[in-house]
Image 1: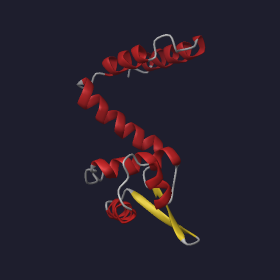
Image 2: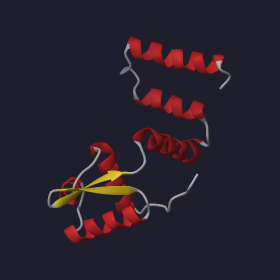
Image 3: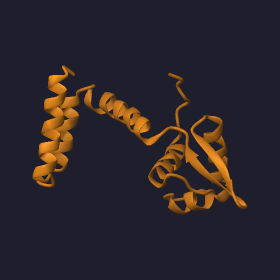
Length: 127
């Protein structure tokens, strides 16, 4: 797999906005940033992300709409691998336990059944 260069804090912030929105203009991105930099700084970040292979852009009238190049499912798997490795020592059990504790009492009966079914299926497949 082609490893892309690491992202700065601001680059990650822009990517998070674009993953949440699916695509946005530079102005829309800047509006959603906490403590936003100047317009030219946002455009510079967008150029860098294009050069690093993280974004594409399409012209929409007088402006560009920027979108992530990596589909959400693949990006979420990569992010989870990073979280597992960094915070849980690659322990799926530890990560799941933390998620369940975060949402204690919030899970409906149907959600608990679906989670149990996923665990049972993984056990059957020897994962």
